[in-house]
Length: 601
Image (spheres, rainbow, N blue to C red):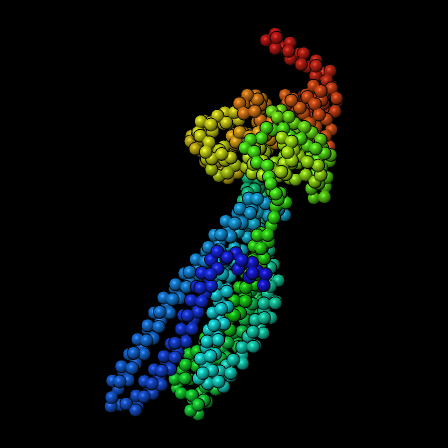
C-alpha cells in the first residue's frame, strides 16, 4: 500500500525503536490471557476441591493466595510494560509530527507561484494540521491496533485449541463473516472519506479567506452574505460527515452481531460440553471470559478499518505535498556564487508564457550598473512579469536574463535573491515590531542603521508612535495606512543594501512631495544600486535615467523623459492626461505661466 510505504519511509530515523516498542507492547497483549488461565486454575484446583477437603482447607487457602498474588503480579508487570510501550510509541508519533511539519514548512518556503496558485491556503493548513495528525494516528493507533487485534486473536485461538478444538472451531466460524463485512465496508467507505476530506479543506479555506479579508467584508457590509457562504460550506461538511458515518452504521450491526454471537455459542455448546464432562467448570469459565478476546479484535477491526479510510485520504494529501517540486530551482551542476553583484541587467530576447498565454515576447533590454530605470505601460502589459524574471520568481520560457553577464539560472537562488531588494505595491508586513520588519532581510542590523533606512524611506511617522520602533504591527500591517506600510516595505528593501533595488509601484499610496523626497534620498544613498521602478505616474518616472514602455508584452518605447515626449507615444498620452492638458504646446504655455507666477512671487 502506497500510503503505508510512504509513512514508513518518513520514520527512517526512529524505525528500529518503533519496531522494538511494537514488539514490547505485544507482551502485555498476550499476558491478558493469563487472568482467565489463573481463574481456571482457581476454579478447578481450589473451588472444585473444597467438597473433597472439608476437614482441611488451609492448603486450598494457601494455594488460592498464591494464585491471587500471581495474578496481581502479572497485572502489575503488564501495566508497567504497557505504559512503557505506549509512551514510547506516542513519542514516535510526536516525532513524526515534528519532523514532517518541519520538513514541509521548509518545502513550502521553496515552492513557487505556480504551486500556490493551484492550492488554497486553507487546504495547505489542513494538510499541516489535521492530515498530519491522521498520519500520526496511523503510527500510534492504527498499525498498533491491527497488530494487537491479530496477536490477541491468534494467542486466544491457540490457547482455546489447547483446551477444546471443537468448541474453538465453533467460535471461529464467525471470523470469515466478519472479515467479509469489513472488506465490503472498506471498499464502500473510501470515496466517502475522500469527499469528506475535500469538504473540510473547502471549509478551512473559506474561513481563512474571510479572516484575511475581514476589512473588505466590513467595508462593503457583506457580513451576512459571507456568513451564508460559510454556512453552506459548513453544511456540506456536516452532510459529508453524516454520509460517511451512515456508511459505517450500515455495516456496524453485522460486525457487532457476529461478535455478540460468541458468548451465546459458549453458553449453549460450552454448557452441553460441561454437562457431558467434556470440559471442566474452569475451562468453561475461561472460554466464557475469553469470548471478549475473540470478539474485541473482530469488533475493533471494523473501527480500525473505519479510521483507516480517513487515514488513507489524509496521507494521500500529505504525499502530494511531500512530492511537490518547485518549477523554479537551482540547476544541477556548478553554480555561480558571488558575495555582491555589480547590478548590470540584460534581457536577451526574453519571452514568457504563463498559463498558455504569451505575457512577454522577444524583450531585449540592457540596464547598466547604478542606473535608475522606470517601467511603465498599461495594465496587463507585463511589467510585473518583467521584474519577476530578474529574481527568478518566474523563469523565462525563451531567451535569457543576465546579471553581470551571467544567466540568472546559473546563480545559486539564495545568492541571487540576497542581492536583490524588492518592495511591492501589495505590502506584506509580519506580526512583529517595526524594527524587526525593517531588519527582516538582515536580523543583525544595528538600531542606528534601522533608523537610517527608515529616514531614507521617509518613514518619519515611526518616531511619533508611542513605542517607536518597538511598536507591534498587526497582521499584514493592520493599523497602518497604505502609505505607511509602503514606506516600511521600502525601508525593508533598502536595508539589505541590495545591488539591485526593485520598486513595484511602491509609492502609489504616498503624496507627491513625500515621493519626491524618497526619490531624492534613494539617489543620495551611499550604496550604489541599480534601481528598477514600476510606475503608473509620469512624476515617478520623469527623473529616471531611462524609461521603458511595455505594451502587450513588447518594448514599445525606450528613452528619457524628454525623448519619450518627443515621440508622441504612450508616455506622452499619460503625461498629458495626468497633467490635465491637451497638448505639449499647452504644457509649455502652462509651465511658462507657472514660472511667471513664481518669479513675481
